[in-house]
Image (tube, rainbow, N blue to C red):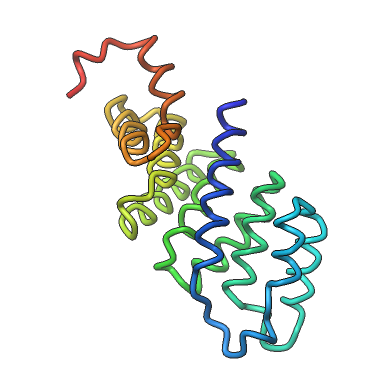
Amino acid sequence: MNILLRTSVLLFMAITVVAIAAPSTRAMAATCSTAGGDHYADKGMLKHAVVAYSAVLQKPGCGKDTHVLFQRARVYFAAGRFEKAAQDFAAVVGQRPTWSKAQAGLAWSLFKTSSSKADLLTAEAAALEAIRLNPSDHYAWHTLGSIQEKLERPLYTFVRAYRTAWQMDSKKQKGWDELIKLNAIFDWSSIA
């Protein structure tokens, strides 16, 4: 459980960094500003941030603003409200399917809420798309490894994903706990 919580927090931080720099599809930036929600989110006031983002989405012309939806999704994500996060990430991906961080957020949110193999397969597809769009995203690689492990894919598939995540992570945290766990269980000499 601690591993999943830490992974969620680290993924949230990565999404936050990218969200600030991510382009949006807004016609009028001032009308659909995320400043209020961002202020609350930065202070850890997640409920207030959701209210602020939701208020912006109620404004005329802002209801489908991908930047606002993404920001609200990341706050839902940080609050552990993965069902709501998945809804908002899915809305973003529906409009901007090439936004890799939205795909990665959708994958992890679906993974966290999965109740069937079909849900996990959908999460896996989103993780693979995030990696296709940004092969150097170690968070997407870690998400893929987690999903594949839960799907009980062959060992080499999710080990590859965890190793890739670990190798790409400058702090060497992503995938490390999973690799340690697997190292205690398996003979690595049989895996290329």
